[in-house]
Image (cartoon, rainbow over all chains, first blue to last red; front, side, top):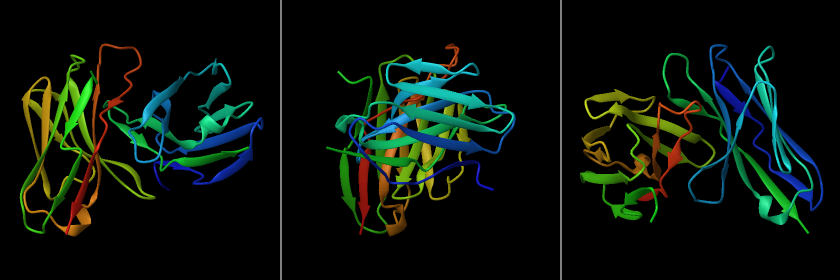
Length: 110
Length: 114
């Protein structure tokens, strides 16, 4: 089993749609979780951290399920500008390195 | 000015050549990282450094070496470049004093090895 797995997509959705991404991780000792956004051939940029209680930032909601070892990202009211690849990242136990998933591509169409 | 900069932004080189990619940061972070990204493979950690005197291998360090010249500078070298090192290379930094130690990435270096 790979350490961090994501559905590669692409997810094709119309503007205004709600879309959800999941990410599973294998290291039960992981402590910190993040969602990054990466535009084509650009650097990843932090979208949001993921807290145990779940957290929301505008149209974006992140959830963590430690028992099942997955994190999720929900995007409501999708915009054309949301088109990008979304990477989940998980810390490795005992260190502060991150393991990244391969990313899920989102394409929002008019 | 960008907090994390990388030079060069694009590089074409030939098999067997030695090249160096440089990363500088003005964020004051102690921790720095080098990743490579290949299409469909995500980000893979090459080397990381938690302070000037601490260098660690990542998951794919073979064929690479690094130098941490100062807190703000972390260089990646390809001793003898080969075509399968063609990739997009990112430098990143983080601050362990923060409750959530997120990583901040430079703009990347596109490397083509012929």
